[in-house]
Image 1 (cartoon, one colour):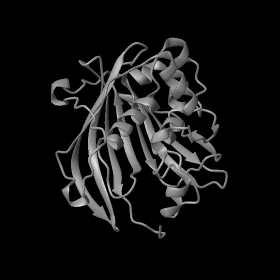
Image 2 (cartoon, one colour):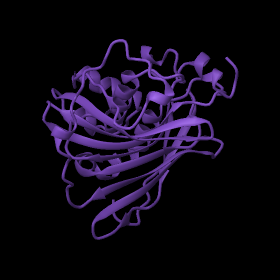
Image 3 (tube, helix red, strand yellow):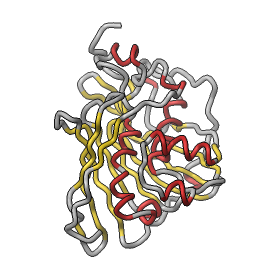
Length: 277
């Protein structure tokens, strides 16, 4: 597409997978209602994946090789909701092209927003040596809110990108673009979902966490047969209106030696209870 062209909106029926890790989280009906939600929430990384459907259609795999995307969750998305993803016209500068992304529900409320860019040049990936891969503990340790601080590292166990893994996540994101499956490339939403999942499996907290914002920079494609792991570290801790947040940096690493993507995100790790259990 050329500058000034407006890609068509995409309607996606939001759906939850049967992930056993959802039990006891806000992606489980009973637990979600404890925190004031009407039912189980669609995970923020899945909504991130919904937003990504427009830039991949516009720019193809060049975007997954070197592009960026941000996402800010604004309202809950529930199983069965229709999510309408739209964007601004492409804005071009001398260094990149940009799309501003919005996801709305059928009431017209904005549930998420973001921005995708396609730089004309490639960015230099971070030094993989600065991001050690630490095995996950089973079970994950319980960390009180006042002991979770800057410098905490998240664990990860390598997972091979098989056809089964790829197909499962393409279905989870209701992905329409055929290039991921045809060329055996990991979905950008899977990369985000994987690093978020690893952080969730690294520690237990007083409440389930909530995805708030995220930004990702791609450096290379992850393909079928690659062994993928993540490495992340907490770089800020703060409290707002009774909810406890952390900011963190993460990388996705292929085959132990190649950084595929860098992500920066904000997470509520202890949620204010709005409804008594």
